[in-house]
Amino acid sequence: MTPTDVLARALAAALLDGPWEATPMLERLRVAFGTDRPSMRTLTRAIRTRFATPPSRDLHELAGWIYSMRSFGDFARERLPILGYALPPPEMTESPWRVPPLARRVSSPPT
Image (tube, rainbow, N blue to C red):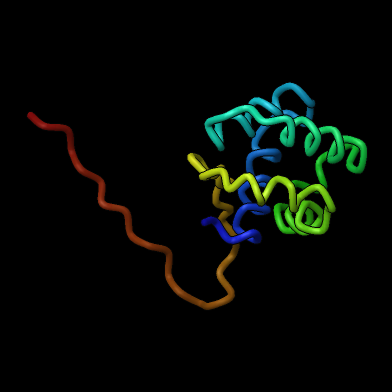
């Protein structure tokens, strides 16, 4: 069984992984869980009512809100397996340590 906090993050990740419009959001949930359930439509409507725009693309904020929803318990009891987990693209930032950049090996084309 999927722990509820992981389920809330998987739901949030799927919802944030594209346009913030009801139909594409619902489709991403269907793909992530491999099924179509009424609870997905309920969740999508509730989130679109609460957040007119994505919550700064912040997975933790949205997952926390989903986790606190009364109807989340209904979704969790369905015990759906997570078939796909949307991951945000990695972000490169400046290193807090003074280290040289990694060397890149430049290979020549085969002759």
